[in-house]
Image 1 (cartoon, helix red, strand yellow):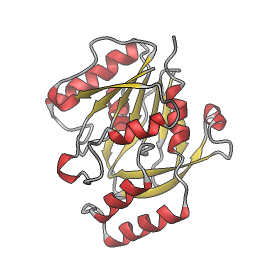
Image 2 (tube, rainbow, N blue to C red):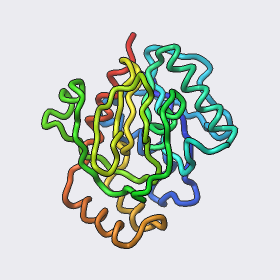
Image 3 (tube, helix red, strand yellow):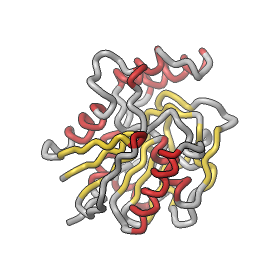
Length: 233
């Protein structure tokens, strides 16, 4: 199986020394489930995108420090790519900014949240029947690191998970798009590094986030397992 990773931010200036590059997190995540996965990276900010849509390949749109509503040429191109991929029913998954970009591209709305930074591990309620296969207790715990939120879902989207902090934590569109505000790819080690270097959140929020790393077990592997089910031959 092949996964096309659309890298929307390399985080080079804030990347820890123990990581070769940001996509390493995705390699480690998916390789834990399938060691035969192959990867191709696309630098979205440089205008790189897959040239064709294939039903047996998965496109994963990563996080970014940008906002999906910002007036940048690369974001406009990304939103158009998402619309084209959706029209072709190409398997596609969104993570954090990627989640927001999919929503923005397909008729939803993204904006900076008045609730401020969401960071650490958060527990969300799973409300879609398809999610119960992966989260039988009807809850999902994931790493988070965001200020923007999807405040309006696309008309075609079905809500998958929700919380008091973020109403639209995850959604489905058809059988080819799966999108999560959380970061299934984050490891505990990387999450700890992010919190130690966090400048966008108050000390109180950072402390609560650190405590959440001890309190909850992230379920990124189950999210990845679901994502790997999207492509078909």
